[in-house]
Image (cartoon, rainbow, N blue to C red; front, side, top):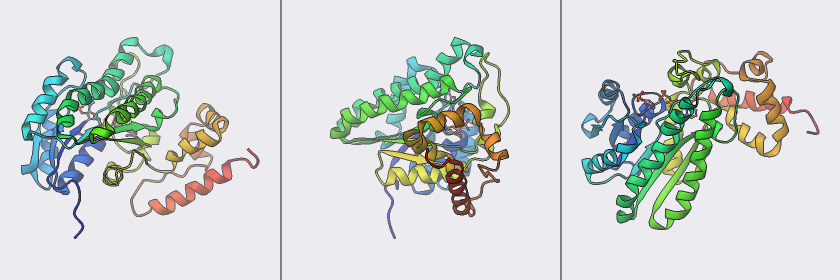
Length: 303
Ligand SMILES: NC(=O)c1ccc[n+]([C@@H]2O[C@H](COP(=O)([O-])OP(=O)(O)OC[C@H]3O[C@@H](n4cnc5c(N)ncnc54)[C@H](OP(=O)(O)O)[C@@H]3O)[C@@H](O)[C@H]2O)c1
């Protein structure tokens, strides 16, 4: 039987209480990993532990990633649980959904703290331990919004763009010390991220965006992330058809600008240009083929 590189390895997963982080934790633990679960909601972390294949290999360490000043002691406590951490999944994140002029500056700081400064602080805090062991891997959950900005997600896009810059430099500096970085650029994943999102004035968004509801399952996303890390990838695009927008940006930047400005997902789908049925793994291959054809038909000849 093929062994996997996560068996008996120590994984720290931030944002493990729901969505992608929860699915990742369950997947890693099912592969034999010891998983340190962290997020703010301790009760939800206990529920994740109860769902795990090997709950005896789970440790729970609640922490608020906005508390940047105490991240060093959090990192030390996490390391001391097993005197080691092999993989750090920097996954915790939140979004502010609003127009720039309606977004309070405090909300911009908040999203930058949770999505950008906390992964920076956590990776810096763990770096000395990993350099001493000459091994370690950071897996960073970014987004298509880390590749281009979209309306109503300016601060979120900024935080995800910043992750690419920071962790590409980080990788270049410490790869020779045995420290790896895998950047995950995720497309739409059906989680509660838009329900948990805040509006520009700090009130809860409270509803699931249709586009996110049509995304791949968190379990499918977790599988793809684990596969990318297992394969030692530097970068991985994860998601449905929308992930190819990164290629559209590279080769047809004007087209992407037009689509972003004038064709939000709903309009595209209503026009029959993006088929997003309720997602299941079994029909994913057919769905991808249909969507690739739809986008190919949409790109005007000669552009
Ligand atoms: N869903 C998508 O379509 C999508 C696409 C691209 C990228 N992503 C990225 O994927 C990651 C996971 O998001 P998700 O979709 O799984 O959303 P989610 O279900 O809302 O999960 C977000 C996780 O982050 C944790 N979190 C939020 N604020 C925190 C804080 N201050 N301190 C500690 N933990 C905090 C939450 O736990 P607590 O509330 O318990 O603290 C939760 O476990 C995020 O980085 C997101 O940007 C998502």
